[in-house]
Length: 547
Image (cartoon, rainbow, N blue to C red; front, side, top):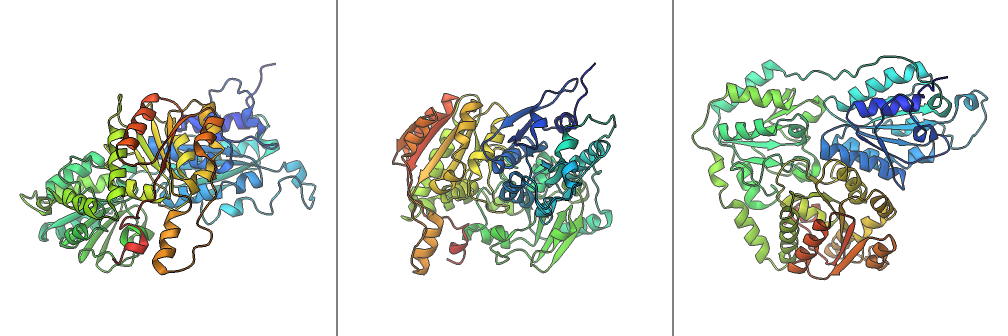
């Protein structure tokens, strides 16, 4: 008798067909069907991680680096609950991730027992405030249809994570022969609102552009460069759109608007054209950032067009369509605020480099930038954690292209870098640099085993300042006591050695760090560089907004 694929086999096959070449997961008593053979169906590679939180972080890291669907499979109850921090980060950052968790068997649910192994009163309900959609198929014939819808919801703009749970006996059941193609929503634009916006731009003085992650999601980076050149407009990038323009593009501002010279330039525009952004609190200093009087806000989600500023002109629609139409409908300009950009980043950088508080941080950024962009075979992808070194890199490092710089600013989750780097490492042949502090690294210590097991080209840069450096700065600034911020830490070089990972220690963020990173990235395999440093936070951190 010919073996029949199971529902679990069909789930993996559908996720792979939708772009999830790698599925990250952790086996448990209820979801082992995912790890059994798949007769007659091609399925993506299933990579075991050491914690369910990592499964979703890795799926998110893969999605950000590749632009494709991220996918994770976990077990029931605590397995699903362990993903919550990572799922919330994917939700806040708009990452297209499908999380499939097992549920207790239907045969046990039908017995109406008070409690069975791993059972939760409402497992799916935990994800309600975060998920873009929730699906709970309870029969084999429902799974294919619900999964096709789940994939479509995750990938359709605005992108976001979707949760699905399937009872363990349904996962093991033969797959129903149901054809369920994935149907994404077609891109659209509000023609009337866009026409009005084009007229505003044509009748206005200097224009500035604020580009968010929606530009990258829409595949509109090249079109954005053309529009900026057409309008002679500087382009300000958000945490999620870094690299949308290359460092040499004449329209790329290259430094955050939190720096006073850059904020002055932004505020001097008469109209700000914002595309694919949610104007989050960290980028706008909780709506205190000075913006032009008129803001044209192009977004696929109307809820994101209200962000605490007056003078907002909402345009509901796709970023790529909007940009292409605005090139056609607006007048080409001979001059504009782009003329203020030559030398701007250099002036800001020289000021920061001359400030005794930030000199070391500038040297750190320069060392990482030279090492990550100078390796043979192309640039490294840099995945940052919520840590002072990550804050500096996310805002002042100059990525060569989109999708090579990651940062968990959506939700601000600590412990993102190492597990997300696992996902990013599968997206291309380029090496990956995961930048963590000593506190955040300990959240994902076990993933060193995953990195070794999968022989991933990941270098972990662990910047050790002996605790939670940002919290320590906050407390020092306010003159409060400092309990809980100084941490006992192991010898991280010996920890790496225990996992069989080559490592080295440096205590200088200048040339020694650059050389160590260059060696590590050229090695092409697991590596750890431990650097002792305590960096002063940048202006993008909230305690420094009002300085």
